[in-house]
Length: 228
Ligand code: ADP
Ligand code: MG
Image (cartoon, rainbow, N blue to C red; front, top):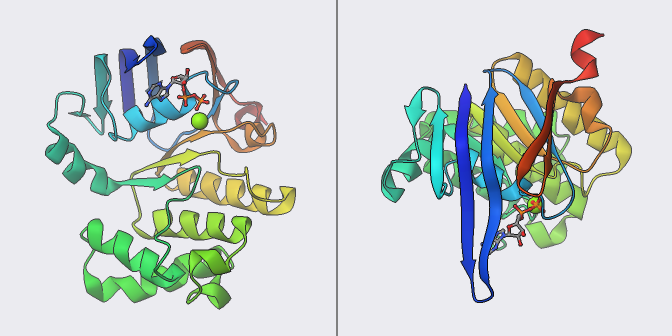
């Protein structure tokens, strides 16, 4: 479960303070898949970074799996993050490493027993239909293929929380739907997923929708799909 209470995030810039998040309170039950929607600049990425324990709020509390992370030191948060999977907007794949090696690196960081690496990597590549590209480097892959490797890399560590920034931005609608439906399956199996998106089809797969505007929650609703 993810519990965010009264979170405020202020960035100091040469032009003064930017209030990216203003009094955000949000509870996300285990196994939910939340679509974070809102215009560019509304605070989606900032909130994902805070929920993923990458960044800390200026004030307010963040509790993940019953552990307060906002009060942790940076090195404690780094250890805690081993249970969190990330798919970043710009993928953040290691350019000099193959897809396979990128996944090995993630498994090493997450502290997964080496004996499990090969099986987990092949399974994730298979699910994402990327087996034929295991030994390609990112530059040898299309944007959509890099996206799928980034998803495979996050999933192979079997995270309890998965944070995704714009999962379908670089995918055609069919592949986008495939990735969303995959996420929905992971959520049904107990992974809690928070994803930012502009894509209206995300609403069909999410269990709830959180709409942000100017750093505040405008609405937090159960998705229509849950009632179908
Ligand atoms: P979104 O992902 O919805 O487009 P962001 O969370 O990236 O929105 O940004 C929210 C606001 O915070 C924007 O005004 C953005 O310019 C500002 N912001 C985000 N990150 C930083 C930063 N590191 N330094 C200064 N301002 C930032
Ligand atoms: Mg963003």
